[in-house]
Amino acid sequence: MRHHTHTRTLTRAAALLSTAAIALVGCASTAAAPNGASAGENAGSTRVTFALDWAPNTNHIGVYVADELGYFDEAGLDVEILPYGSTPATQLVSAGEADFGIGGQSTVQVARTAGLDLVSVYRVTQRDSGRLVTLADRADVDRPADLDGMTFGGFGSPLYSALARATIEGDGGEGSFEEVVLDTGAYEALSQGRIDFTLSVATWENLQAELDGHPYREFRYQDFGVPEQQSTGIVSSEAYLEAHPEESRAFVQAVARGYAYAAEQPDAAAELLIAANPDTLGAADELVHASARLLAEDYLTSPEREIGAIDPEAWDAFGAFLFDGGFLTDAEGRPLTEQPDWSEYATDAYLG
Image (cartoon, rainbow, N blue to C red):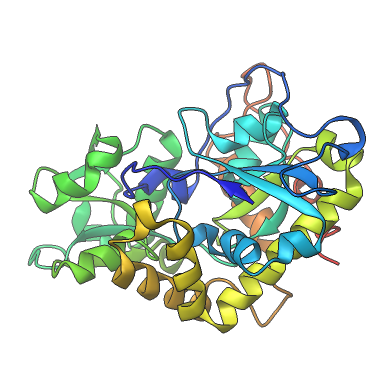
């Protein structure tokens, strides 16, 4: 695998929750040549490109494990990780500029409905890792309903506001608050008291806050009526899957091996992730190990299905949440009048 490291901040909030990117980009492809036969750096290997959604982190751990332990080589693949840039991974995949990329459930549901060519082929987290958070030392906030009338640090998407509002309303509050858009500055603003609450990721920002000695008080959306979702996953496009079924199967199964290893041996997997990304993660050893353990314990697997598999009930329920909230539009920007068939948005066909 050829991968690129970079030093962009690891605070990634919205990108790891549920991005709602819907703009189409150009259709020029830098993926494999016809029939997927282009030669990569490894002679005889098929080149596959994979787009990150942010700087390397534990959501990507299975991909890096697959590389470091030779799973991609065994599958005959030369996988190149494309570093995160200004264009979301889902747009790169839809446009054919990446073969696979990071994209969670709600991302696929919003973006495919709006016209992007996306299919979820692997679910990294089997449940939602997102949280509504405030500072733990706030004596005036014990529950979501206490956040009524306060200031929310948002990320520019109505969906994030809806998650906060639904959580507060689910606790009996009115869901009324002032919102300021702070993007990745939300956590600094929270620590400085410039906002009262925001959204975060339990497996990263929350852990970092604990390690820093300033833990968050966190509220899981699903404890207050928000439907479950598989918040982080891997996507491809129907165009690529149809043209390269064998390469797609080889990639997804190698990735599944990587995440299975991470689920069984999180500390060893954390070391592999750090070794592959020393510039980005070399100084974050404690955070990476803590995150890998939490993912292995609570998120990467489920007793109800094989690793990486679809939870159809979650796709249906969160899809209904998006539809009822008016977050779904077609390719022309018109609100949907009927829910899509969510079974067409995700597949387990490449897992086995």
